[in-house]
Length: 413
Image 1 (cartoon, one colour):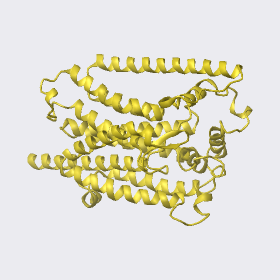
Image 2 (cartoon, one colour; image 1 turned 90 degrees about the vertical axis):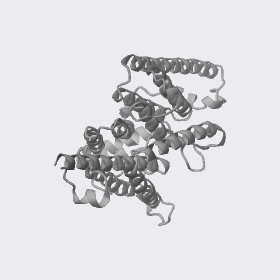
Image 3 (cartoon, rainbow, N blue to C red; image 1 turned 45 degrees about the horizontal axis):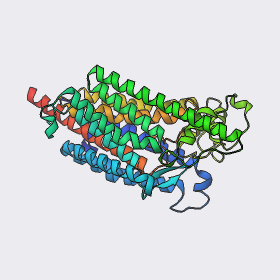
Image 4 (cartoon, rainbow, N blue to C red; image 1 turned 90 degrees about the horizontal axis):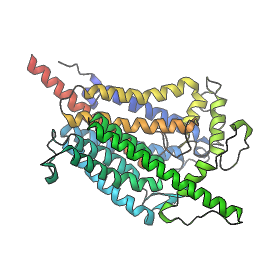
């Protein structure tokens, strides 16, 4: 019979997943308070970053961590329903976003404080997991009764197009993250190899077409500039195309130490200065020198502040925590005989890990600049709620896996 720890008995769920969650939240409160100290201590109000983040942490814990854990541990069907609701709501809001969304940094991100991209992430991952194991989990829809691999594949493509397509128009990095997670789920779900290659080929073709269109826009803008005109700015739904074109064709190829700080390279420059300022060992908590200069230090670039204050060791530990989550969930997935729980236990943490790696890559200039929060650590509203929901589902699934393991042990005795 599997052993039950005192913590698991009291809280439910796997202690390792709880441990990762608690440590990440602890790091979040410490580092966010440090990264936003100039704003947080100017006046103690409910609007400063630390107080706002603390409220979101509490809301995420009681509504999603605790609530979804209990619902999931009671019946995994709640996960299916939650995923379907997120998918439908996310798709509807994404199509409304260009018309009613609030514009932030040149893109429309949310409607009434809700970021549709977070709903789409959760909804698509859960629904893809359902489709991948449709036969084994008795996922009943009319067009599944005569199920074929081709029909399954086309359904997944339609679901991906409904979510990833609209997301790409407003937030290309989120679309790329979701595409990678979706491909990972299809791979782990043992979708026919030829369909995986078709998906990969289609993705590369779409990327090639996009680069070609951006090159055409670049040539048009360059021609207008040579003639004394200016860039085309009225691009309708493709309003972000100018941003992509600028990052692709106008980036400064000189080494950073030869460049002067300006509005375009400010984030990258100060992030590098923060990492260099650590001297490998860190300046210690609360001693960051770049937090007052680095834009979005408590959000899109909080990993650079963590690196500056805790050095290589602290940055490595934060990275390791996300891989521990993925490793532990994978280990738990091997203990269940239910295909849906198995794929959910690997697909959901994969989404978290990919987003974390993208954030770290941006903060260390290993990839192009894009706004992605560090899961559970960066200040956030919808993003924090979405990650909390993932952890709540994982804890609920781990509890059902442990319960089934105990029952099998009792039967053997």
